[in-house]
Length: 400
Image (cartoon, rainbow, N blue to C red; front, side, top):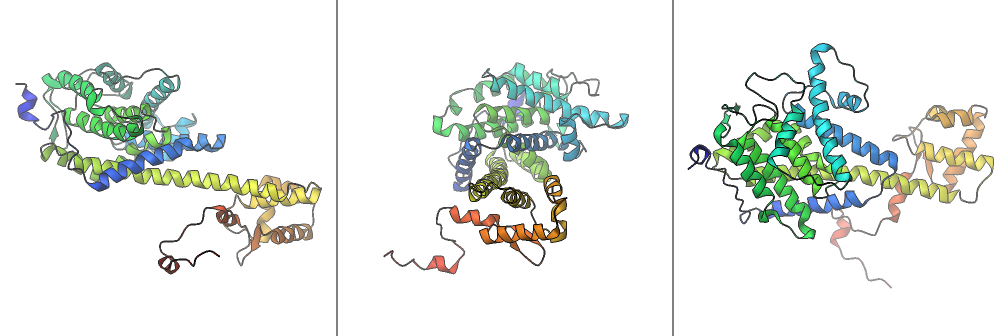
């Protein structure tokens, strides 16, 4: 009998989801479906790049902030762009970010090149070596090497040091084994379960002297990405753990104290993933809405090619980029293109152009100013009853 079997009997490398709630299964199904939606929607190159950078920053920050990194999301974006300059006393914060960023990029590049990224003990050690690279650590800590001393976080003590190598190998064998073989239609569902369990088990084992949390979240990211989860979505769990930090630690604590009941942690993690995916889909829908609107405006001006009509088309498109009504006197200041277009025109020209767009039904005047009527695109959506509308409670009359 190994020591961990006495000290950490909840580390069993078994999972029984028979008692999982219907809500968990529904959330897993929704997460899988939404991942497919996000992966299958073509985005404009600039939007796709922005979505990737935005959630890369959120994921990298979440991975490090939960361990105490105090940089902001804006500062992380500056690191991604190579523009951040910190004083010497804070350079280690940037190094923590760059280390995790390096690991995420390494995983992404290997998968983009269709190269295998197997989950092995060597890979776990490599991740830990990367996250601790160039950082000051305690004398007993060797980056990328299994610890030889006892460690803990808050009130939790990691598994016995003499069992850590064995436990990591058991973990890799288990996650790579038959328990997680899935049909193609279930790949993402199994990957989410697998990723959350990998995270939980690495937190329980705590195999390294430092950087265990960052290592666990990198493994989670790799498992999701390997299963075909789109890269923005693969960062959502780290972001969720960071934004719900107290609940994250409470759930980890319960998982061990309960003797290995993984379902509450699973439900907590998957709910956060689903909430994040819903937010991402809103961004995708907004982009699709904008593309459809712009196509609609271009269609309205398809056979209109004189100077005034081109000017009016530009006015409609540029107004649509502003989320709120624009006062008439400020319209020519909204974009460089409008400023240049109307620089040599009289205010009456602008008034006439707005009137023409009003006739077409694509802008309107309000008390606050002029706005593009982007909502008219919603009329092109499939007919659907509003569940909150009283009318939806009454069957529609039969069609004649």
